[in-house]
Image (tube, rainbow, N blue to C red; front, side):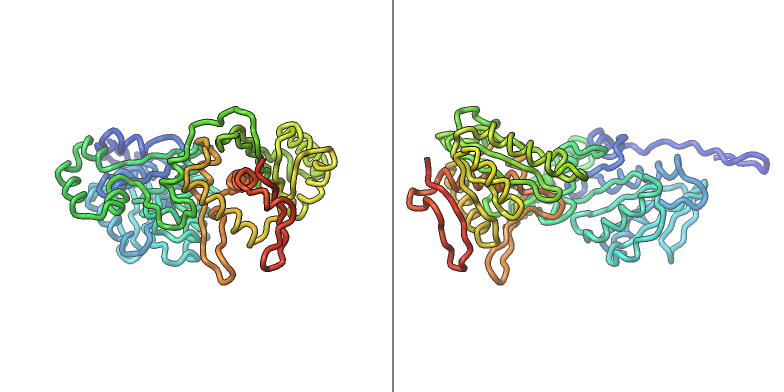
Length: 427
């Protein structure tokens, strides 16, 4: 670094060494980077290098860059690590505010996420959320809001911790190729290959820890935390790769609501998914509802043909069902309620756990993996986590219900709480 009274400072920067998988996981052009990583795989060091580089290259006096950890004391660990790694002449620091100010005036703030309200208000030009699976979801919302005006980039890092958290759901969106997002998994074996961990140490940890704990901490594989109603292993055992394309003998249709999708699933005579259709184009466009439903009814008729089908007739779905039935469709209505949905999901769970249905990889399998259940005062509530959909899972459940229903269930079934559900026999 050189400086004179008449010339601005000139700083020569060289990125710290990172092993190949570590660098590729963090340094990429996507705005959002989501990294699920093993403990001690280098995610913290790599992201400290990333945010310093970002601040050095894009910073101006007063511009803020944030490092957000679950609690203040964890943010302090990263703050101290950064100070140890930077040449002392390149920054000033404030211990009470936990800030590092670079020579170009950019300010790196290290914050705890205990109080989401304290994170609103600032314009932030880049951020890292550390140990994201342990950060409150409201705090994630707050950090995202601070990047709105600046369109600042973000890295979300951490060990995996079960599946019931926003970081896991966001990682699945990134892994699925959501626009502007990049996904990476760094395992302990990546770190061993990169020369930063010992294979003997990893094996010692395997011997000392329960298998599901070791897999989370060292392989970044989330455990089945008991919230999935089907069982993740059972879902995987039912995978068939792609729809069979054989003639369908039973079908189910779940109709769009708000931001949801209209989804249809047909099952062949072996219980494998024969075809699957999914769309929501124009469902919510002003003045387009009539055209959307007319096109939807025509598409359901064409796709289903003479195949017996259960069709969602809940609320606005009732007139849609009536029009399909009036055209001669071999259909029966199904009204979703808390009770009927519980019965439907329990039937699907039994079928999956017995391996009696073939599920194609893709949207249907992804929704089944993400499904959750919680015990309530009135029973069990099933559904997708916030921000995700369950339409494909519901369509599959309707098709399975029709496929497996005995003839005694033909017509109207009256439940104990007087809710009415119509299902048909197995054809």
